[in-house]
Image (cartoon, rainbow, N blue to C red; front, side):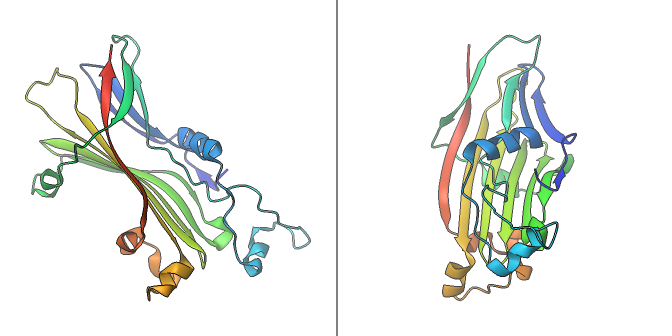
Length: 224
């Protein structure tokens, strides 16, 4: 398990009229990590000693110690509401970036850390979710950020967006965009990009230099 798992922390969005709930939490994210079960990221031999609790121990990193997760959130219908089926369907619709860049007041904002691990001082593995609510819509960013010093950077972003309609009782139109990026430090250095990991404490500084390896756009479909 990561060094810091904030199992009591979560972020939920509930549509009162329909009972549709989007929920973001550490335990479901870690279930995704276990199911994906990526091979371990190789670290330099000189760094392996940091993973030891005793100098005499041999370190065998035979699991994904980065806690990389494909998790995009959890969806459900609250009890005592009409039962419906929920699933994400691929779509050509896109999140309205113009609406997000408008000068609307932010009515509510919050950020929740779900889990974090410093990889025995070899980098960082961090899963956070943040949300902001404006008069016309809400927007959420679930971000998994990994930096293994001298080896790899990986970023998995999930953006979720819902515009408020004139009919508050109508079922919400929720769009989700997932984008995975990653690159080795070696490949970045070959492009002339600084390889000093300390320069990338903030993933926003490197995000557009990491190549996209997966991208999809989805809409939440509701069936009875």
